[in-house]
Length: 205
Image (cartoon, rainbow, N blue to C red; front, side):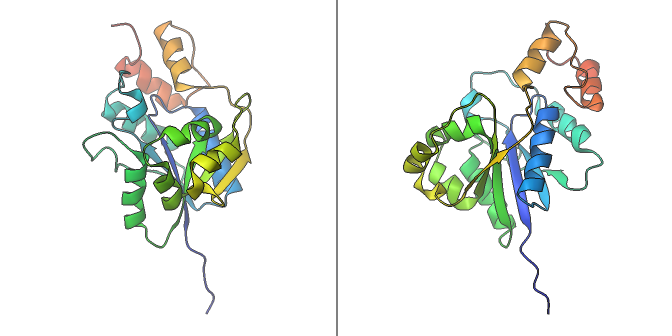
């Protein structure tokens, strides 16, 4: 009998306010480079590092994600954070996903800037124990990997740095551009732009 390898699942967390082409490029590139079968986008309900920032309604962020990944059979959305009260800690989310997929090889996907901040996250060692770390290298971001490993020893041997195409798009910049009436075409999927315009997200109230 031919033995098949365990499924390899990537988890890309974020606020996705809004989801943009940079998110999609990173997800697709890391899926390819890490030989992942699927990538789940994990929208945070209450991100602990943005407690003072106003966030768009969950229904709009979920709708934009659904529109953005429509037609890609390898992309999906995890709603575990949306169904939980309290702050959306990554370690807790990964525990729930791990329990639901006990035989799956899980990779938590992040940008290099997130890796830099990982030691300050809630229970970073549990994050590294519950998932391998796939990190998209970002130009202009310097990270002392040795210092990260000293602070988060569970990441030793479970960390992969992956070069990705240059992407200088951010959700913050998109929100700013919409607020000031500047174009965002080709920075977000067309269906996402249409939703932003139709609902009136990010415009002065």
